[in-house]
Image 1 (tube, one colour):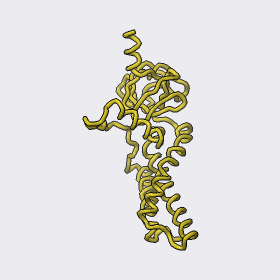
Image 2: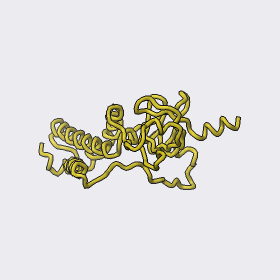
Image 3: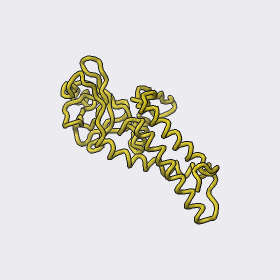
Image 4: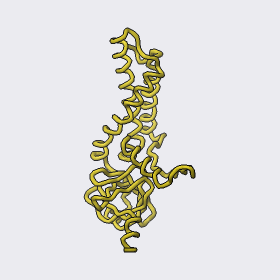
Length: 213
């Protein structure tokens, strides 16, 4: 089965985009490591208290925030193309003809999203974390940070952004200091300790409640 056949067009495009992004990153003409600076405004008609948990659970399921966005995107595009072409080949062998391109793309998308989330989790543990050489990581303990994307819980770290004393941004992996705590996307926290490349933090909202009590 040809990758360039009409019924495989969505997957050929995805594979081409993956190769293009990788090439641009290698030669230094592209920077796709989005750091989550954009704040999404939630409609006033939506329950603002429920929305962060909903979005946080979704991004955690998809693995967004566990690794740099560029890495997540490359894994997603590759798996989308691989699953799609394999599905078309299976459909043709079973029925004698492949699925419509749009239907195959929709089915592949539904399978690719959760699979990508599963695959990027082990990558997050072996990839070096972003940091600058201006200061040591220990100097970040005691500073405020903000969860960039996803949801952090014990045993399930997420990516956070913290500024050092010189104003340089660091992207670090964070888990809550307390077992029962969780930190949602956009939450501010205090980094209280670190173990290797992993930081542990207390949400500022919990610290305020503790001081009031």
